[in-house]
Length: 268
Image 1 (spheres, rainbow, N blue to C red):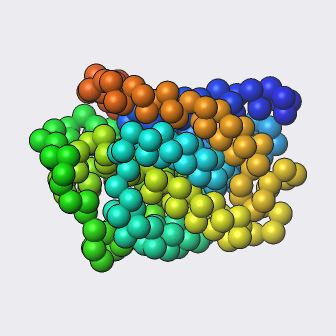
Image 2 (cartoon, rainbow, N blue to C red):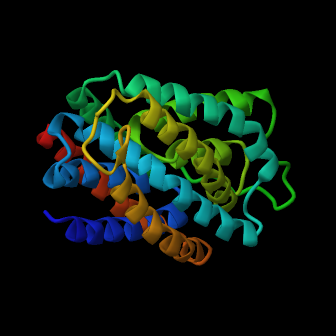
């Protein structure tokens, strides 16, 4: 597959991931990882490094995707910055540690881990209980516990290649945050996760891990192509999040995540 054709596919993937990031606050990274794990070997990435490259490239693109989504949510007043400030140190530490762990895991084992997480995320979307939204004046969650939670969220996000929304959003909602504010806050947290994890995958990778156009495990054409489209698409997803309940979409997306998980298992 030629590089121009692959760039078009990266742009299409970015558009899908951006809308999902803004709309659901969960799942865009999982879609990217599965798609990139299939696509990258077709353009010259070694098969035994494809999963690591998919994770690293997804996380690198999430930096800009999450930033665009967070900016759009901030304009609507739905980012709880005090909560973000408490979580960021843990997210940065967790992202760095998680990426360091992931590069030491065999590519096939990593594929099974990501597939399992897809199935867990799908179950969460399908079976998660709806909670009564918090009042507008509710105090943002804060304190050392949020920093500790950030460490765990950052580490697991780095291993499975996501921005952490599938963990951050339920945590914040459980602590009394209105769902749309939980999504906005999760987007801001995703910037820290993506930065720390992508740098970790770049620096922890063995020399010559990928062919040309890569820094460590981060395949730059994929990361930049996905990010460019995501930045444009994320605000559209954010507008939908403020207009729609999203329950039907969540069920559809949960079913899609099951397909993604199964495809990763069969592809291993």
